[in-house]
Amino acid sequence: MNQLDCELLARDAFFARFKKGDIFPSSRGGVTYRVEELSDRGMSVRSTTAARRYMLDFAKLGAVAAQFGLIHPSSIHDGVAQALQNVGLAETSTETILYSASRQYLQMARVPPAMAV
Image (spheres, one colour):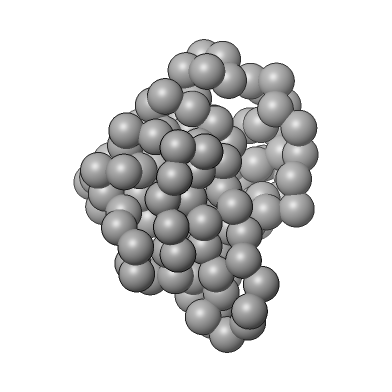
């Protein structure tokens, strides 16, 4: 799978499952994120407890969702970084949010995480 495949897969899949205003939990719980906008580029989210907004690129969401079963919950940052690297994408500061959004997508799509490889 390459960057373009990841982006196209994720754009269609995430548009089908998420809408503006949807809320999903963080990877460790305690924080939740609200979908602010879905655009051609990605999904913009904001923590419900802070003002900072994050743009989650569809290529990165697709890479994480497609390799979700390979990411160990005890090392999310490193696992997501490796998933991104596997398809030629650079690390980002949003690894844990990418993981959380991908996990929510897989739950909404009813895809067992181990099958998302």
